[in-house]
Image 1 (cartoon, helix red, strand yellow):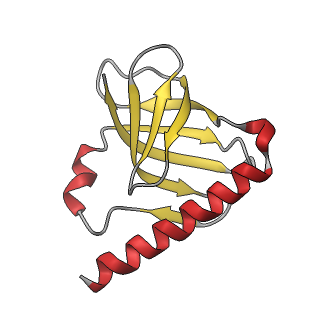
Image 2 (image 1 turned 135 degrees about the horizontal axis):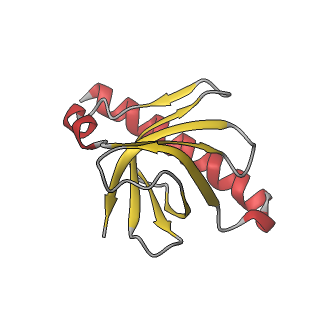
Length: 120
């Protein structure tokens, strides 16, 4: 339980930082990410663009601009900042991360690697 509370505190702090940074850069809102070098099941696109719709939960949700549904990110790695977010409070979620993509963060230009799944 203590680990869960610590993880939630870290995620809440990260969400607050992202929200503050996003409001400071109002011209970038909404944040559009261009995902590329994607791997996964046979129907996985090699690249796609998506707009962030949620970042306040333990996952990040993106709405695909091509109308292909949503991309729910479960694993997030910011190589430039040294941030690696994994669902330690629910390790079973890792098995649902079937799609892995790279992206350049639109706010700071950081190299990102994310894994998750698509929803309709």
